[in-house]
Image (cartoon, rainbow, N blue to C red; front, side, top):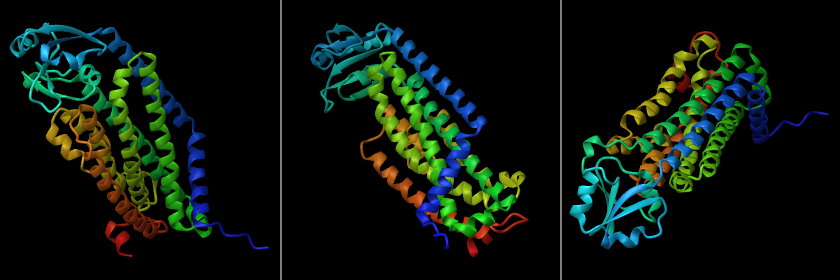
Length: 361
């Protein structure tokens, strides 16, 4: 009796299961993730207790803005007569910020000297207009830490699993196992399985780290901060999903163009640079709204830049939706392009396959 040929979906899932299983049985992977887990947990708990020990935020409030801070926890309120007195207290360092009434659509605004107290903005029911008296010396360290956090998670997960996909593809070519595999399943099912398997692992890692942040902030009593960072983390997970699929397809395609492990770098280095670039750019330009805005619409940097802008309160509600559409379209194009390169290069042994040759067939 002839064995039934598995369907495309079944073939894809078989490959995905193989990718997931081999990674979960790898001691280096488990050890590295365990270290990352402990570092993330320790960092979140330390940051939470540090913020908690910082006490209340001293704030000057004018009479026409009292209603907006009534009942808000964590504020040490100093009543002032007018805006001029509020600005004086902010300038001389008596208070960290001032809440004043005005013509803003919300009815009030926040005045700071240089740094915006994120805890204050998160405590208010709506994010008001912020007036910075000395913008040249502004340093929002909480925003900086959030930007680095998004950048590190994206860099670590994309680099780790992208390299895993590349090594897996070349290993199968080098040992000629791929010839046996594609005799049983379609080439595109092999590619799809690798992408899906590693995407599941990468997303699992991101979701675990997100859960650590939620638990850590809850344990340390930073519920206000958690409410402020919750939406950006959720958007980061969504953007990361599409961004990783895009990179995974390109990593598999790039690796299929070579036949030896030592040659992987010749085709995957440009992709590594695309992963490193958002990390370094968000570190250097996290407080530059113009650069961050541009980065949030570039598919390779959007998973880092857009959540950072959302955390900093720089993005309108529709911007992540537009950015996500651009990323999704680019992801589809990358999958189509990667599949063509993968199919045309997978069985070609020996010298590196040129990109023009991989696309021409």
